[in-house]
Length: 490
Length: 96
Image 1: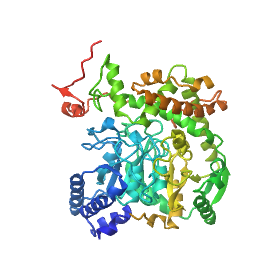
Image 2: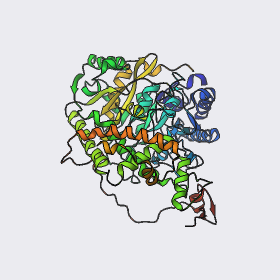
Image 3: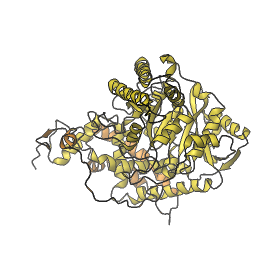
Image 4: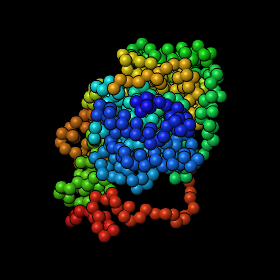
């Protein structure tokens, strides 16, 4: 039976657990076996602790036997991106800086998953400190795309996306600062959701750019993603940017909205070069599908789209330079052993030189530059004002439509090393995802077809705190297609 | 703006508290100049009178009651320190 388990949906497995057709220990053992079978090819995990996972599974089974199950996630293995704090587990951010760090506490989203009985399963690879679009910036390994092992899985949540696509976890958590959930979800043919900023606590997420970062679910189906999002969202007093909001039951909303005819917007700036974009054909077919359902498809304009990447790389790097100042090699993190210190600053400088990788150094130095005296107004303040214009673009568009449809990424997964020497080219690969983070709106990617045998993702951008509508729109497409049942050969 | 597109890599790296090798300086200077050149496209936009966005939605100060809560035990707090002795973090000796 175990061979059949690794591509089942979380909702199916949850039902099997509830019906006692399966135990969490059996499921967890099957998951571990799958990881052992394919991990050498995929490289999704930085580390995993089999005995800890099995102990969690045994506890889940014991609860269920006693009639005290915590709910639908109880006993389901959930992979965790290695930038989220799990008490007693490594928290490396795929950086030498934190190579030996063990978290002394749980992130809020982890607390929530534990309180619902999920089996926390492994530490998933990422671009160092979530900075990157290919998972090639990890200090430890390069994760491969399960659909083509010569290609990148996307980034920065490439480990999470690859693990789901390869059947190495039932669900996974990622984080999205400029597309880091949606872009790898697109490249790996899975569902990834960036929630509205402030709807999921950032407490316990290693900060990259605090006004942009969001934790979110990655899954093989829309309903599975909804189930995980429901579990982790909500107000948290430990995160001062967390919002109080009323979230409906997402799974119930998906059902009740199944026949709704939406008004969907196509931002003309995203489709300006459609004929030159290799991954556009499945996107256009998906749009036709919604038209066939009776949805109204309207062209809208987001006139400041062309400025989003520039705005993002000022805001994100400025915040990163501030957030990563804490890694100084003194209280924790890597400390240089050999240096000729003239003063204490030398200790920081050498420790940070050894601990950080190239991309992180590049972003810290760029962020320091745009915040430095004489340049702050020209770059950082200017970018924050342009961010307002970008946010207003979405507010205006959402007066006309319920949600926006766009490609998630300009192309399917590219080959390893293809963009490694050209950071600007790499940054431009996030061109369709970045604006949502600047505006704080929710966005998701779901599989909608293939280009040269590689998965292509449709991005849906929703109104703030309207994840129920966004997921409902996605579910209408998924219910009429079988992409969630198609998997890579490994 | 062309005078802005050459980053003073020594000065900025020092501010960022990161030592760079000569090779890194050369490579990063070129890459950062290219990126800075790209982001200068924001100058095309007139943002006179536009309020900056620091957060996507209004954020106000959040105050908590000042009350004692369970703290991290000393051994836990020191567990990740590069070096520790007698409940303290040990740092290298630096003589100015």
